[in-house]
Image 1 (tube, rainbow, N blue to C red):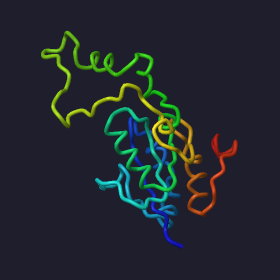
Image 2 (image 1 turned 90 degrees about the horizontal axis):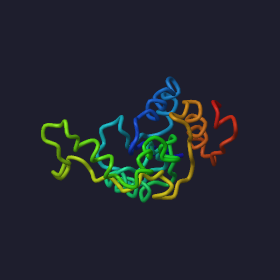
Image 3 (image 1 turned 30 degrees about the horizontal axis):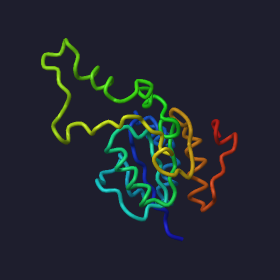
Length: 180
């Protein structure tokens, strides 16, 4: 059997889900023996590859760069997993949504009167344009599985990954959704 090609990606969020992934501790050795990690913020790969079997996506879709990468990931990935509450619901990242659009956040962050030279960043490449509304992953692309939690506990991450590595269709039982 071919080794699974696994990826992880980080959209708008805090990286706590990736920290929980690293909390898999010694089981990471078993996982590394069974899969090839082909893209992740924890490895130095700049371009998302084609033919990825499974991608865990952390964070919500908050800016144009997030959306562009997410569309590429969905096109090139067989199984997409929304990884953590920001990916599943928008969570903290989406707290700006009730403000109507991104303008109040940008104005508060960059146009404060106590700043010496208040101005919005305008140089291309400095700050990707914020989307008017933060989106959970499934509002932008189809999602196959969900790993809830802020961050999800390592046991919950392991429960789904073990099933995927074994070639099984993941089931999420009450035990998987708590602390497994």
